[in-house]
Image (cartoon, rainbow, N blue to C red; front, top):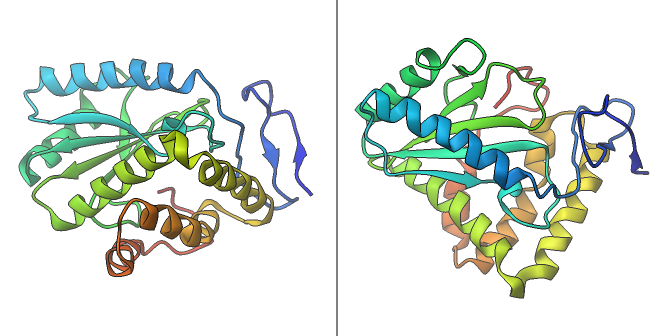
Length: 223
């Protein structure tokens, strides 16, 4: 059964639990999430521009980008760059350009091919933030970009409110039954497949997207 618990006054509304062993937190939609994204993206843009990194967009993706959708309290962001050189440069900038309280750590691709995964150095901050650098020349990166954008844009459409609400309900249920974030993420695959098919993806295209994910449940590394 899903029950509300208080998270040291850091989550508002409270997180939901998740079974005695679960480490997954899902909360109801927080209207401050777009504000957090705006503040974070402005800093990212300043760091990248100061170091002459060529990028085409900084985008709010993931469930916190969809009004009304329950989500883990984590602001997911993609930085889209034109090539591998700028991807590497962006990675180095986020590790070394910000002040000590604002830098990011690189964890490779975080178990999903086609991206560089950057985690904010203070993982206790609520909401957390994850930045993914995606190279437009990389075919795998193009799949990552398309997936993020199509999931976000489809779920934001008023005509898909029933689908959005069903996805939010599923998130709470999976948070209660999943032992870690990787298991939680993989259990969402069938729902994500349904959403992507609504967005016009073929089963083969979705299979190609899922093949990029080589994360293993119970792995201690973040993604």
